[in-house]
Length: 275
Image 1 (cartoon, rainbow, N blue to C red):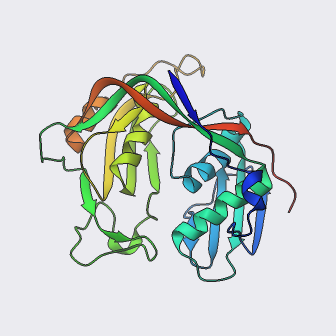
Image 2: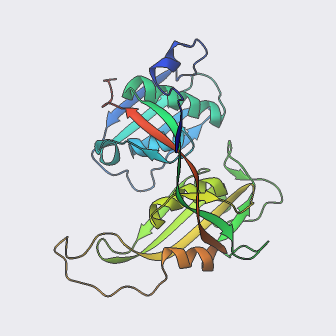
Image 3: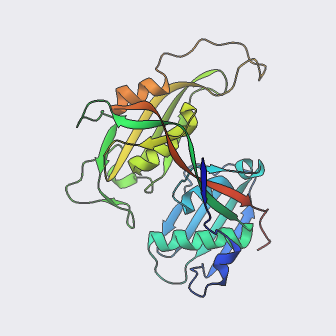
């Protein structure tokens, strides 16, 4: 069974007078990786994303839904996106402006579908107990500062990444590779969605945990077969699989189920119009 609920994301939104939009915006293709230390910034005055792939921008704008229907270039081509709000704006208002920019400059149109399929439910392995690398934080995402009384989390208080951002470190480029992934102030719903790509099926949050969490996972994965890249075979590094890391480091588990999953389906998207 597939129940499709159409949500217009694109040109139809532009006909509304109240559609939020940036005062000025620049979109420039950038073949380089972002320079060291550069990071995405959302401020009351604007938005700055250095060398970001389009998929990441859409995920940010729409809250990291499960997405399908992408052309290959949206994964590989990077863009410098810089925009000014014209007036002090909240984070959610800036993200709404980003949705409008994606519709205007990339002709993004999409809809949402609910599909019945095999899933994993993300649950607590032991009721009321979380692992050492899953730490609740209370943070003001407008200022990116921890609220009074919040735990320290997994990042230095004076150098926290933006809410909802993630960082990944990989020790090798082929074969079994040690991967460390850190996420700043993620909800469990978003965490579950993000795990889906690594475990082979969609993941639904059933933890019952509310609020936001800093998360760190260190595990071994196969980035690309060494033989495919012409590299010699290598011994796997010491470490655990992603599923074991979820248990040992987060105190969570994946339970096999069947259920409805919502997808954000890309109907059409184009290379950006000139500035």
